[in-house]
Length: 289
Image (cartoon, rainbow, N blue to C red; front, top):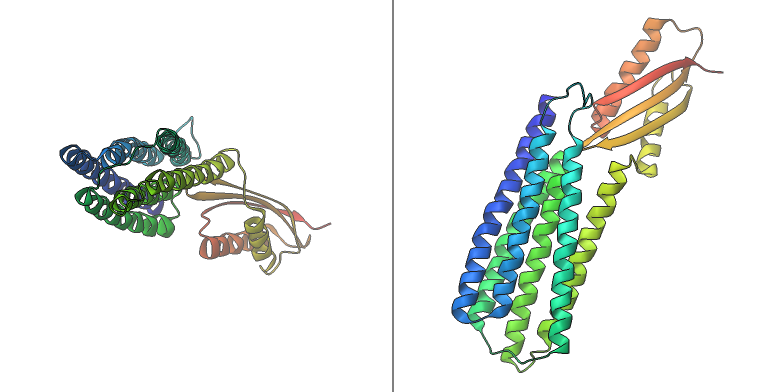
């Protein structure tokens, strides 16, 4: 349990890094955009303010996840992290739709934009910074299997794409190709919506106790390898935050005594912990028919 809480604290650090990065980048983009007269850069900075909200939602979800189990939540509060991922995905979809809407409006009411290389340089620099944040958060998320932080990391990546799209549009105007700006915005908007949808689908799948059949089959085969297990009669799994809970009924030789059967369950639990990082497994033993 201490390891789980430490992992959540590590994920919180990543969420805080995202929040600080978005605050700094939004101020830089809006400020430089206002001074240079770049509407594209200013809009990009305003979009980053919504990302601050998404990152704060993830941070709150991670903090709630660290609350110990109580009478109302015997399994703990780990699902708060998944709910935070769901909220972040909805914010991402909203941002993507906004980018797409503005791009379509730009195409309909097309106007050539004045060149502004300073804004382009700022956009590229900001894209590089947020990409580094993305790599940092993704590394931690993969290490501790944090859905919440992975959602924040994907949000970081989508914002890097937005900044790159902004830079492409500004640079293209230097060569008399201002139409590339709204086209790039359309592509970026679609990418953000797709990323948000993928996170939403995964989060809602977990919240409704969905679980990968392939992964469940791998766990079943792992249990069958334990000496003394003759059959896996029933097995169920669900994700609670970054934890996997297993309920399984295995068939064993009817002549085994309680101690021998218990040894088998302990070996199953040990293997699940070592091979799949599953620390919550309820193994029921029955005589094999």
